[in-house]
Image 1 (cartoon, helix red, strand yellow):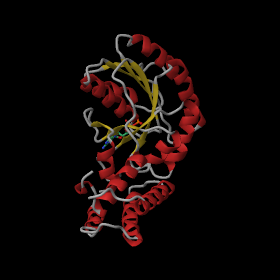
Image 2 (cartoon, helix red, strand yellow):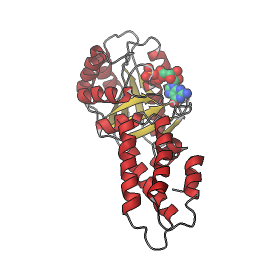
Image 3 (cartoon, protein in one colour):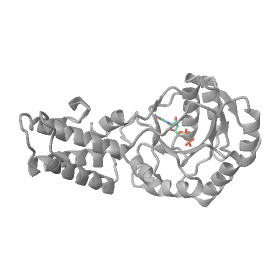
Image 4 (cartoon, protein in one colour):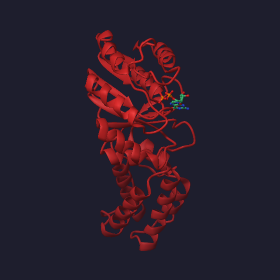
Length: 290
Ligand code: GDP
């Protein structure tokens, strides 16, 4: 990590250490406070921020910097390593035949993400298909169909069928030529039992290789509950954070990652099919601290 990746106030604090070979408790506290400020304003859960602070304090004061390393470089390395620990690695996504179910509340960005992920897999040389099982939200079928057309990927949906489980089953058969199946599911405004029941039924028919939870970057305290509920129902293997092109930094989603013991797979950065990035720790860390 280079200093430029950090927010200006944290960079300023670290710069004050220039020339020093040892760190005082006050030095470390000032750095920890800066990091806390950034992470809390990026919606990172308080208990995660406190754990990170403890680890940084402990290591910065206990670990001897290797010979020739300045105090500043030493603490920068510790901060970076602990931030990597906080945000985690990218969800493992082998480029092979697989079925992925997308879950999440209405408006989180599932349908958009389904088409974007299909586009991403197609650019990797695979043949993806999106199966739209959202019979609840008016317009979901048309939106998915249009986006898949723009992404130039296979699509299955049935606006005349109101049984999502049947659509999922038929959709898998109809798109048997594809090698990556991305199943979009219906959301609800809140964590209603009917949403979870429907998801469980779809999951049992589809038998996916992974379930990804789609979360809006603006999610705050709600992330933990949502993650717990979806994880209990189907098991969450990874998280997608959408709308990172807005002002929200997406730190709230880390509580979902922590709750499910999973990791982040993709970031959504706009409304178009190509506005998707594979998660990668350093860019996300800069975003959180910047
Ligand atoms: P769903 O109900 O979970 O399927 O959500 P949608 O995919 O329909 O997304 C809800 C709204 O968020 C739509 O207006 C999308 O265009 C928008 N959206 C989704 N992902 C992103 C993103 O990464 N950036 C922005 N700016 N808008 C997004």
